[in-house]
Image (cartoon, rainbow, N blue to C red; front, top):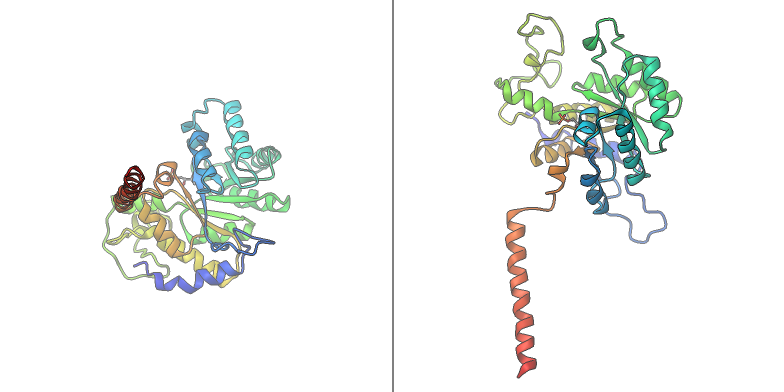
Length: 316
Ligand code: E4P
């Protein structure tokens, strides 16, 4: 089971070696969350992002082709227009734009085009899966592109990360961020409930690498997602990555992604994530709680009573 005791000091040791997220040069009152986690909006919809950014709730944006489509993009020129508006709106904070080309040469060319749009552009590079699109594609394309972009001083975010080994290789290639998709792991675990088992080599129990089609593959999640009562496979992945990055002083930031609810936010923070990228519908409710609402209603009523008494006293 995911155990916060395992991450408490490890994540802290890593954070203090990294740059402050809210630096306060020249300020007498240092920011109390100078090394706190950054929160990004996981959407391309400007109408959602603008109020969240203005409220200081987010300090960055992540997009992907699906989110661009949801934001209304129906052509490349429209997607480009949305991307450029986002880049301007949140500058100098990062805007993550995902590559859609599938070969190293074309991906690097597309990345160079995106990077021209603003210094705050981060290039999202799928860590793998290329051969799944077409068997002739190089399965290591993502790592090669990350490496090539690091050599050109362009920041990358390795996306679609589902294992700590993918995270390690992306970091070794030069990724500034890695994005573990804990929500998709949790979705999988909920659908395929397996009893909790003792850990093997990893925090996951791998008893058989074959999937239901009898394909042999170490990443067959049917056998990896044992879930357990709390379906905590996502935070456990983040905990593993955090521990590995701490052990080797790797400064790649863990950008936890694919959230479905508030509990996952908390679990990720306890597991050692550096950044959370969160859908707008969750971010819009960060200050809500039924007891907060009840408390506010009472305080408001009681403060009105003071005013009424003052008015009555003046009238007499
Ligand atoms: C992150 O960068 C991704 O865009 C995102 O979190 C994917 O989430 P989903 O699983 O809801 O599609």
